[in-house]
Image (cartoon, rainbow, N blue to C red; front, side):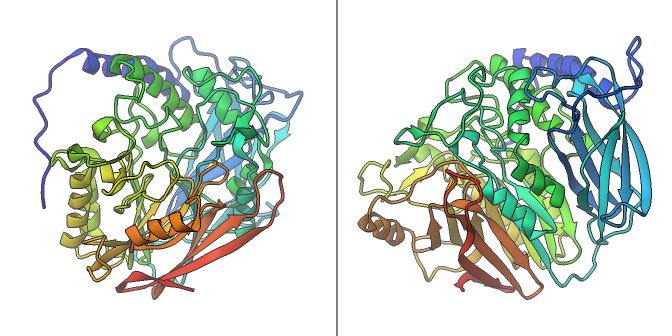
Amino acid sequence: MPRLPSSPRLSLDRRTLLRGALGAGLGAGLGAGIGALPAGAAEPGRVSFKSNPFTLGIASGDPAPDGFVLWTRLAPEPLKARGGMSAQPVDVTIEIADDPAMTRIVRTATETARLELAHSVHAEIEGLAPGRDYFYRFRAGDAESPVGRARTLPAPGDALAQIRFAAAGCQRWEDGYYTAWRAIADDQLDFVFHYGDYIYEYAHTDVTGRDKQPAPRTMPADFPACFTLTDYRRRYALYKTDADLQAAHASCPLLPSFDDHEVANNWAADSDPKHTPADAFLFRRAMALQAWYEHMPVRRAQLPHGPDVRAYRGFRYGSLIDVAVLDTRQYRSRQPCGDGFLAGCAEADAEGRSMLGAAQEQWLTERLAQSRATWQVLAQQVMFAQFDWRGFPFVKETNAPVVDLDTWNGATAGRERVLAMLQAASIANPVVLTGDLHRALALEIRRDWRDPASPCVGVEFLSTSISSIGDGPATEADRATMLRNNPHLKFFSDKRGYTRHVVTPKQWQADYRTVDSTATPGQPVRTAQTLRVEAGRPGLISG
């Protein structure tokens, strides 16, 4: 398998020292939120809330065969800088039952919510039975949360008849209502993979879309672009007040990742498109990823250390599915040729370019070598397959293929290394899950993407956005151009929605679910297209 160039010898430059300072400064504060109290820190006290402290809902996530993470954040006034909380720590009781009426309590735990982590709670529950539903609620003072449903992973190697889950993300507040999240809640799934863009960092606006139409809903006028920890916390708080999103979180576990808008549009490693000095950008990244941790049901292993978060990790659903959640932001090469949708960017094909970085590539190599699942999932953020964007209204006419350099098409050598890993590990049924583009696509991953007769080595299901606006070919002629230039493309939709996956040992079924409109709440959600993959026979089948 081709290898990345070896890492240069470590030197203590300003950037290295900055990471150390952030880790020592922010990390020390964060550690106080989850471990031993620092000297002089306040002890938890009795508390009485004048209003509901569970305004941001509850969630479960990152399951294991014997447990899961349970999350909430105390915020009686969620859009205030501290969520309406004082600096006083608060003890939060978690009750877990094996029935939805919470009559048979099987486990009780207590966690302390502290200001250092925005009074969030990440309770790592252990010692439960594998492969079954549990139900939970939180108590703080005299307040009680709604009841949520969690689910443990199956025991390692268990033979499963079926797994049902959704892939979703890209949920800009101003662009519309979260009707798709309500549909996900109604689906009662085993889990949801969130591919990222949980929030958008942009400032308040009254308009949306390329044609600047009035926004279906707006943020408060005092919401600037996110740069500080308070900015990011308030943004998550706003999004999490949505009742449909809360219902989805309460319905099943979340496997969260992040893409660019949790920090800044199209950021890559220590850079952003505005060419902010790396030293300054890493401070912003640290604030953003702390807020991400504070609002996601993830484990202490995902606790940020300065600007760094170990976001890549794996989940095994018996012998049926192995899920590798990847991180295509923190360790990637900067976008080549200045980024954008371009033709003829030779830099994109440079051997040393990567989307994962050397350490994550090694982790993935080892995980694939150990995988014995029927289906191997790469759950990640940006388009993996080759794609020619000619035919879209924002692309200039040219005779050469136009690629999106923020995707794996901007680091083709990195993609080849991943394909080589899959081949070396004899992975028979690779499935790539993606988002980012605000459009729904289904693609066959072929050795030669322009040749329909070339061997198919896997499939990619790219989910559309929950609400964020996208666009498609302007005319039927443009659509014909897109399909002609991409014979491996088997489905395209510009509607909002999500993708629901139903997986058995014999086949993978992807239902592309679309919302009629996000301009008003409660619109119908329909299945626009169903595609299938038969185990052992890579390729997409309609219907």
